[in-house]
Image 1 (cartoon, helix red, strand yellow):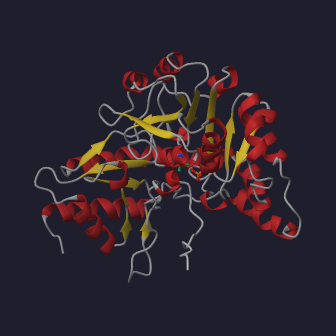
Image 2 (cartoon, protein in one colour):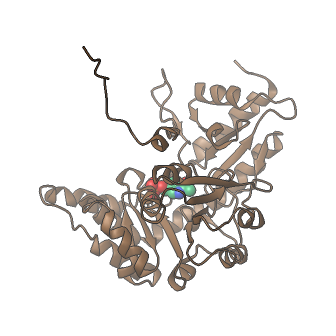
Length: 371
Ligand SMILES: *Cc1c(COP(=O)(O)O)cnc(C)c1O
């Protein structure tokens, strides 16, 4: 009697090499209420106009949404002066980042990103069967020289989050241009500008003009951060017509749902709400950086809506102790060990109560009141 081997469906081996993405925590066991400062969501929430559009869309739940998300692409076009035909919408910008890898990478190709770059990049690169390549950073900031040193004939995609999550640092536009100038023309440069609205620096640009004028540059944006619509999953990208066309062939035909499309359009039209979110961040980001820095905790200079805090120096307890200490007091920060930053926690700029509360709690932690 021959033994029949027990077979089961086997995923491609590169899939099993992917580390599961672990999102920021959202609750503390035993606490009814906690301040969630772990996923860079907006403390102001969505625009009231977006909420209203979302509610109205409840009447249309039985019908398929417009698979081309035309009114959202047109609203993006009006708001940013772009050609709606070259706007690509995604179920969050995460979906677009993954689709770009799926479309432009094949086994044997390399996808490049920087040392503490967004974790979706290696996940997307591996899922496409290609090889992730990492370039070291300088002062927790992407280095164009280090990235270019890793570029070779097999490099087909470069992901740059600008500003980067979880470090909060950014590259000036001149540096982005220098990076692009050093890439082969068959390599796609993806500028992930998820936090662009928060950046108040004269030498920064999200890359709109660049994506509009270069055959190998795509810029991605999201409604999850400053628009306060993370749960609806809306992202968009702008790029060359040939890139948009290729991605449109493989994306799910109805990747954005109707309520998301409606709320996204209304949010784009509420400029005052975005201004309020920018003003809130402009007030609290420097206040948090200064107050926390004074405690002796390391603070990486950030231009986004979050701060990377470094523990374990100046006799201060380590990141895991700080995380537990803050959680017990109802403040949920983000562990960033998976980003190669085990000594750090990432904190989103919250509302006033949360911000003041975290600083008070951290002061107590530093004084050694660890229990
Ligand atoms: C939050 C974030 C995104 C946005 O993801 P969505 O899928 O649009 O919610 C993209 N890139 C970076 C670097 C981010 O931090």
